[in-house]
Length: 105
Image (cartoon, rainbow, N blue to C red; front, side, top):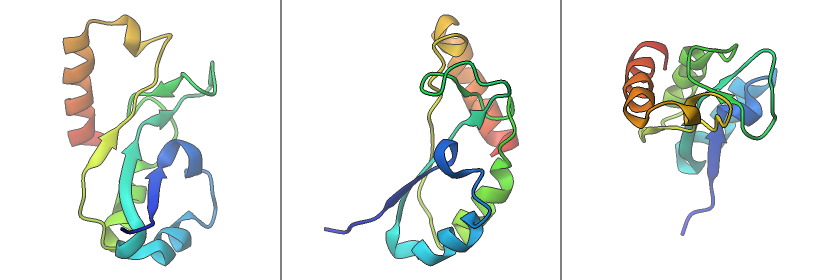
């Protein structure tokens, strides 16, 4: 089995060395790519992961770095949003995830 990295933008988007670290990990170690957004202001560090496009993370740029490193897997959407998206109808949240993934990621 391989030992690798799940690149979760929520935890690493701010790192000035992120592009170099993604390249360093390379195709062999990049096993997952998790997307969401960092809201400003953040209301809760654990359960306020914003919908892609609602925050400050440069998702397209990070995805380009991930793909340049050879990652060919899926971008996994992780919206932990107790105060917002979890309160909405499930179909609305799903439809928005799909639309934002297509336009923002």
